[in-house]
Length: 195
Image (cartoon, rainbow, N blue to C red; front, side, top):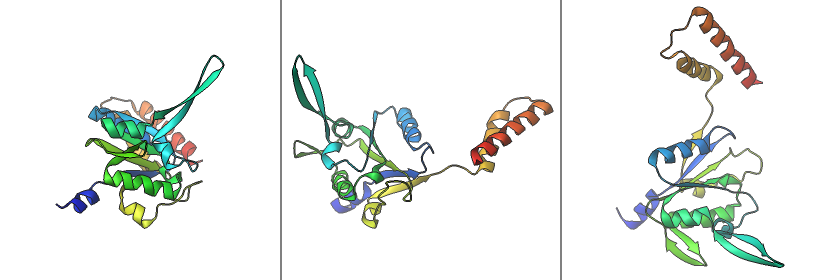
C-alpha cells in the first residue's frame, strides 16, 4: 500500500442523525468499553480553525487581569492518544472544516503554528444533524469522500415497541393482567412519542 492509499484509508468517522438519537452516547459507550480517553468539543458557525486548537482564559489576580492560552481537547488527544468528538461539526464554516480535515487526513495537529504528528491511536469523530437542520452547512462531495458517514436514527414506533416488550418480558413470568398493563403502557408511550 503506497503513502497516498494509506492516507485515503484514514477517514474521520461522521455520525449523522436527528438531535437526541444518541450519537454522542454511542461514542461514549464505545470508548468506555475500549477503556480509552474521550473528549467532546462543540462546533459552531462562529469558530475559526484556531478555536479548535486552543482557547483563551482570563484570570484576575488582585487588580490585574491575565490572559493565557489553554490547549483544546482536540490538541491534547492528538498528542496523547484517545478520541475526540467534535459535535455539530456540520455547523462549522466550510473553509474552517476543510482546513481541519486537511490536518486530520495528514494526521497532524498544530501548536503555535507548528505542525506535529498525531499519536497513532488518536481518532477524530464528528457528529452532526441532518443537512436540512438549523444552521447546518452541508458537506460537499470532497468533504464527504474524506469521511466515513454512519446515519443514526430512531427505530419506527412499532420496532421500538417490540424492543421494549422483548426486554420487559425477558426471563420474567408475568400474569396475563401484567402483560396487558405493560402492553397498554407501551402503546401509550408510542402515542406520546408520535405527538
